[in-house]
Image 1 (cartoon, helix red, strand yellow):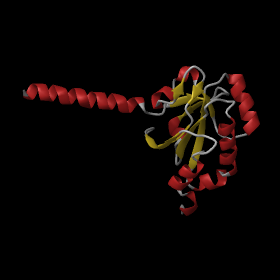
Image 2: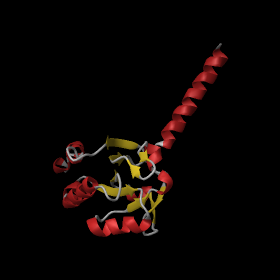
Image 3: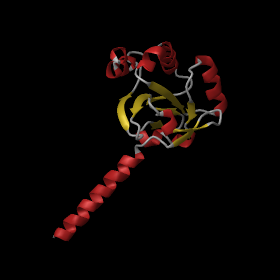
Length: 167
């Protein structure tokens, strides 16, 4: 009986570790310009914020990027850096970058490799819009899934971070 309990507990612990590791942000990512970025370099003295775009044609997503760009100084007070994730071809993603002029890395989510880890993939052509903050160990610190013309999640992240009260 003890043997069976021990095996059962080992199985549960192993599966818990497996699920947890699947939810980690990748160690290395490549931006649309082909630059390899390590998570540790992005997260050095910063909190990494992943913004997923439903699609490169999503007007609500683009407006949110523009608003975040206007608040960069505020977000820098609390050491926030951004990575933008989209499912699009390289040319389309580069056109979007020129359009919004958001000064952070844009990542092409080839075959939904990153979004699948966080249950944000919406094949065949979209991602679930989300904002996810990561700890230095690549685990999720905070997340807000969804975005609409009635709710952008801007206020939720601002309230969570409270950058105006950082010393």
